[in-house]
Image (cartoon, rainbow, N blue to C red; front, side):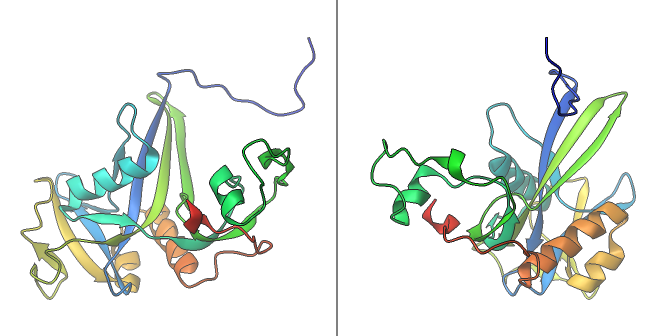
Length: 216
């Protein structure tokens, strides 16, 4: 039996776990939402485990809502990705005649390409393996889309009240630099910095792709 030229590390279920979360910008995109975990005395980003049969993106939005009490949605950005375009995207750009066109995603080079209006995760954190197995955390750029926005009480420290967040968290809305400074873990700070870099249009260096994720 031939050996693969690639290095593999296999993790059968249940030795791995997927989580998803978001860097949640306020509508002005100048502040982000962070949490204070009361029991742990830690400032963190909203995230949590993906449910069975739930998509990663849906898990991220659900966890944001459960932990912050705020409705949010994934914020399309321009970023690099190795993900291949969908059939609908090829059609929308007149790059396929019909479903039987011989040109397929197999013809798309496996290189990073810059894609506009992209809703893919911008960051993957891998923890472990440890005694509880391997944990994968997918991160998305998000923006608050809550009809109650503007009616919340926010004190001078940025603490928000009556959002409906889970009882074990306090919700804070802070200027981006202040949020980065406040977060407990370096990993969370790095995630926020990358999200801001992408938001500022500096997160992509690959060739410009003609295909827009807006076609999805």
